[in-house]
Length: 566
Image 1 (spheres, one colour):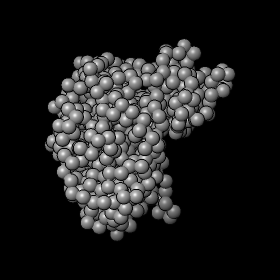
Image 2: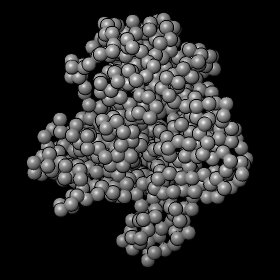
Image 3: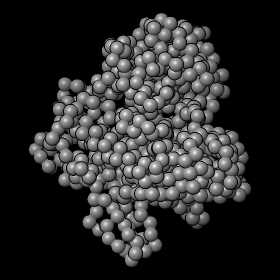
């Protein structure tokens, strides 16, 4: 049985399954080169390189917004597949009305747990749907939910919070259909509002997370009034984005819209720092309340989490502290694109009654581009044979080296197949690489550490490893000055642990670097420039180097180092 999962909204993505086996996963922007591209036709085309026939298309999104084609009234994805298969039968299953369900099942199936409680924290999912109150669909949006999950296919919704733009009309009975819609603005909508106020796109909440440690408590900032619903401060704009109300005081109104501080640290004011701090801390508290409620409702101590907020690696680490007896699984492809994985697994299990588990064990899930090496154009580079030891020496001499190998990573984190690497011991390393990547000055960088050495450098709390880079953990006090390039201002670092089995070339490189510097860690950031998706192909890797100030590109699969000559 071949199943093709498609997410059509932002973070458009395609996943191809053969029964319960994940063949590949790719986000559309890696192919189209338009960041967050939401219409994965190129991903569909890639799927047909693996099979001639798709049996089921599983469409994910929000509010069933897949569109209709003229004449046939098909959604465009089914139409494309029908033509591609020249009429061979396929069936389409649409899950646009079940957005939070697909988040929950993705985290549950990928965790490998037999049973768990799922907590979903998202921006704007599907609406409240009831035949006695159909008009509510247009102004309700799932924002947080809790699900009881039992393998293989028993998933029950226990709670859902709906957000809306006009709360006054909710919380009443509609012919027996009770609709409770909080007048709150929602956890993620608060984060989006602050992110937009700071001059970023609403979806770029990771930048706000990076700024938060520069701030401090500020009594004038009232994001959370105890119920997380201070609409005098935050104005939600479902489904996309939210606003900080700029007319509430003269200070806030005066600084709104200024982005000059993005490139100049001296121009930022304390209020912006404190606002980022406030939304980070208040959202952590509210999500912790949801986790606590989920445990109380089910008695379960296995918690899986998904939705865009779960990419907040700072909050995830705090949950490990607050709930030390809980076994957490934080979905690494927590944004909407990842929903195609759980949705396909759920559909397959219901169709086949198959109970074989297929937990997520790797994120190296992109298509194979190895055939491109033979025909690649390396004009503008000197090409030399190198070993991992040679490359480690180059990095130890404080040079940036790009790493391209294997299948690209699913999700937003670079894990050593599409990475930019540097020496973490360089004091001004953060500033240097931020300038080269054309990023904002305050944004921190991650590190990759040999798995067997991680506890000598970092406090992972209840975790033994973190291969998917889902936690910003405390750097041990006596190590912070040793790796200043990846130690953030609050003494944390988002880390990836790696074993030889998980990524042999990358593991060997870090081991060779340790021989030189006595540090089993490399500075690791995504192989792209600001505003670009991660590179996908060999050609994109070389093109990115040619238009940047970076000089070295290591391709360990062919044992070559490219050194830019221009």
